Length: 405
Image (cartoon, rainbow, N blue to C red; front, side, top):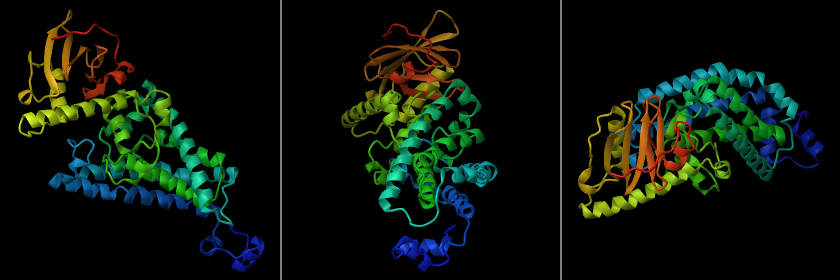
């Protein structure tokens, strides 16, 4: 609460006239308690969770109707109905009412402890910007390690698997998580303001911008006009979408905002290798399209077909696609020593990847020259990941020598 009765008293105490923004702030907050101002976060979060993802709903519905936005959809094969998206929003609102809202109501003593102020003078734009940068950097670093913990076997099975129910994320799925995850991720969010406490307005902006960033990251769309593309080391939707696509087995792309932690600690190798592979595939596609009269090849459906055949065990001896224009040149099935093990040999652009399927989850892979590997996880979800990420994954139990068709 501002300790001045009038604007004239405030001007006298500051030794100058109040700016226009300071006068507006005085008129609004002078008679309100600090606790009341802090609780504005509940309203802001409700509006952000409800309204910010809403344009993405219309985009998704328009894409389903016309297909025009397919060019921007990161996983274009996935389509979400209005009922699917509303169900996600409903679950998020349940979490908001039962966990997020009450947490805001009872956490005010922590705001008093770190001395977030609400009085005059207001911080300058430079001060707000500098503090927000610190908050984002601190949150990003600490969130990285909390996220890695969530991808340990215990953390994923007990907590984090709920967030990964959306292998193709949508905007409303950004705060969709287990209640324990919501509480634990509140620590990195609060740590920045605790280290560099500022004004209540800065705190409001921080909470709002962090949630808007999370929604953009989970949007499922890579729009070329997104302003965040101009932020150095920013991950964005495509970066985080890869993490969701790989799912619970992922040991890559843990960063919440920036990419520097993944780069420093080597947890973006799978993503970078995949991007390099996809660039090669696109080049192969252009060459093939020119040779085949411009017939466009859908590589995502090809991968799904190969995986489905491998997963059900009905893979023919040699499988070919689209008159030689395929990324997957040929696939072979060989009988291993045990009837419960199969060798699945996949040809990626002239490179051979050998895998031995162990039950429903384990995969043995090697060839140092393979571009990528395919595996079936314990939920029978079919995945395509790069070799570098696969080798670092615990479901891969060992190595074998390369096997050629």
